[in-house]
Image (cartoon, rainbow, N blue to C red):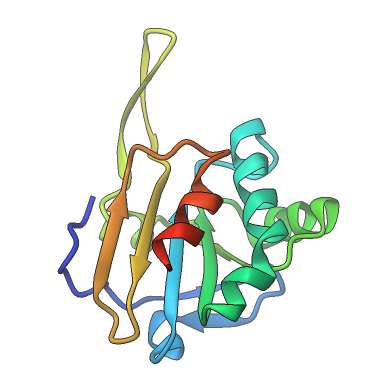
Length: 151
């Protein structure tokens, strides 16, 4: 996980509609950049729906929400449509951004060890500097917690 005070690595990834997004496109806005393991899994769905439900409150505070996983653009589109998600989902199928943000880690699940995305949320300021980082994310609580962080 990257620490607070670190300059957030810029990137370019396609969203659920195939449009390209760069972190630098959002200069002047706060960005909530969250990494999650997979579309349509229980925790990831709770987290995404929580961000979507609160989306108007985030935009009122001048914040943009970007969700990133290694799922495909097509998978993100289905996920967005199924739950009516109001924010941008970015597809990082080759894990370049996932690795740049240090969220590709060894995980243990029922004693089985594998590599995967550790659910992590970053709050990035208007100048592109990480001001909060959390890799102990509780999916259902993360959207409300990030809203509080924005003040």
